[in-house]
Structures are given as structure tokens and as C-alpha cells.
Image 1 (cartoon, helix red, strand yellow):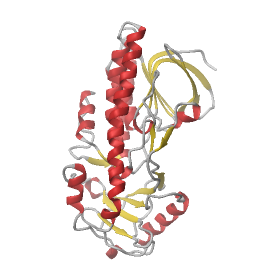
Image 2: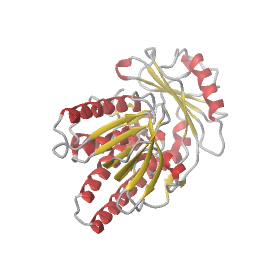
Image 3: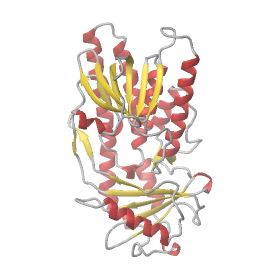
Image 4: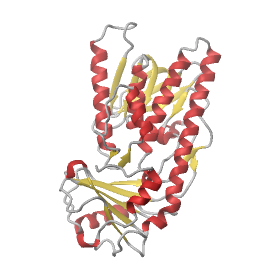
Length: 374
């Protein structure tokens, strides 16, 4: 085990929210370590809607429009662009004068949080190298939890059930689409909904299988069903293996009250059907880090604690509003689902899929305007 090291902020988890948090902490001049249990390349194919609030938050960090003029993109694309920005920032920090002129900024892939102990003036953290199993200790004044709830296994307050569970299976394919716009098909008997989206430049297809919300469900069986549908439609081999996501609505009972500031799914699950969970996480991240920076510069322990509580309360409140929008989508799903063409899954042909006549009015109702093409 290595000796203790001290940083101002430890960012745990480098999805879109964690990347934004690490970049914001560096921009605020805080000594920052960012860790991610996975490798550096994003693989998730879920579509996301990058809301204006998230675009504005990223502009504060000096980033260009990561969707290149589109509001819709994939988590994989956003993660890869943000991770490239992180790598560039780490390289620039390494070439700068040594501390205190330039706060330390570093990045560790395949590194997870193995243990943590939250004190009055710091968080004691044990990090694990997922490749070698080596452990090292770290002290951080604040920890930004962007792990999606994985720190619950280490004793952090658990998120509680806040809505029904349902499974979504998704994958990205590299064969160009044969269709225009967005198409789909539903199975009347199971109320499953299969949706197909063209990727940017019509280079490929992103496919979804959305199961009816309710108790139970088997992700493995649904993934096999999804693969059979993809084969019937001739989508070809996926760019990455299909991902099964249990979209179980969870949320914290109350805001965090200590030096661990949860953001994104660590606060609560924003349903993937809204497409804006990553947007919410990025907005959470920039807001949280700005508040943490103000807390660390407060001058007194009491003021730092008060500002940290305020940071947690602000993120909690705005994230709960996003969760409410997710519940609304689930509530109207049975109505929206009936608009799609019907067929018996998994035996479906390309002639069976198509767009519903009410697609874009529904999108405008939910999101405020028709998103641009991928």
C-alpha cells in the first residue's frame, strides 16, 4: 500500500458527469484526481439529448459544442470527447510549472474506490488498481461521487425505489440505415417496443428494445430476444456487445450531508426514455464543483461545511426535478407506444417497421422542439 496523498477534489467515475466535474475542478484551480474503474474508451450506445443547460455548463469550461450543432448524440460520443479533453488538460498540467503555481491534476483509468471514511475536514479514500489489485491511500477535502451509486456498497446512503423497473436493451451497428428518420415496431401481446435511429452522417444504426415497465424481468432473456430481432432486421454485427440496462427508478431520500457530493445517477436515476440523464449529470457536475470551490475558499470550517451542505441541497433539488420528468415519460409510455406499427416480435422484417404519425408532435411536447438528426 502506498503512502497518503492529498488533493482538493477526488472525482470518482468518468461518465459524462464525472468528466465534466473533473474539468470544472481543474478550471477552478483545485488539485484534482479523477478515477474510473473502466478503460478510457466509451462503449455505451444509448442515445442522449444534450439539453441547453448542459451545453451552457460545458461552455463555461471552454469546450466547444460537443454535439457539433446537434442536440442528440450517444453517451459513447460524449464520453470520448470529454475524455479527450481530460487527457489534454492532464498533459497541459504536466507541462506547467510545479505546485503551488499550478494545481496538480491527474487521471487514473481502471482505478476504483475500494473504501472511504468521511471525516470532518477530509475524506480518507482507498483506491484499487483494477489491473494489479494494488491499493493506495488518498485524502481529499471533497469527493464528487459520479459512480452511479456504486459507493452504496461502501456504506454511502442508498437510493430508494421511486418508480417501476423496466429493461432497455441497446446496441450500435455500423451498417448504414435503409430507413429515413426514426422508425420502430411494437408487439401488442408483450407491449415491447423496438426503435431504430440513424447515427450521425447515416453511418450506422442504434437499436433499442424497451420492455413494459413493471415488476420482474430478465435482462438476459430480453438481450437474446433483442439479438433475434436484430438478426431478422439484418442489422449486422454490433459495434460493441448489446447492453442490458435495468432502468429501475431510484433516488436518495435526502441530500448528502457531508463532504461526499453525489451527482448524476448517484443522486437518482433519470429514465433513459427521456434521453437526458447525461445532461442532468453534466449540469449537476459543474454546479457542484463551483459550490465546492467556493466552500474550500470560505476561510472557516463552519462556512465550508455550510457551503458544502448548500451544494448538496442544490444538486439534489434540481436532480429530483429531472427524475420527475422521467416519471412523466413512463406514465405516458402506454399512449406513445400505441402510435408505432405493430408486428409479432422477434419475427419482424424491414417492411414491418416505420414511423408513427404522431412522433414529432410527441417529441415537441416532451422536449420543447424537434431534435436535429443524429
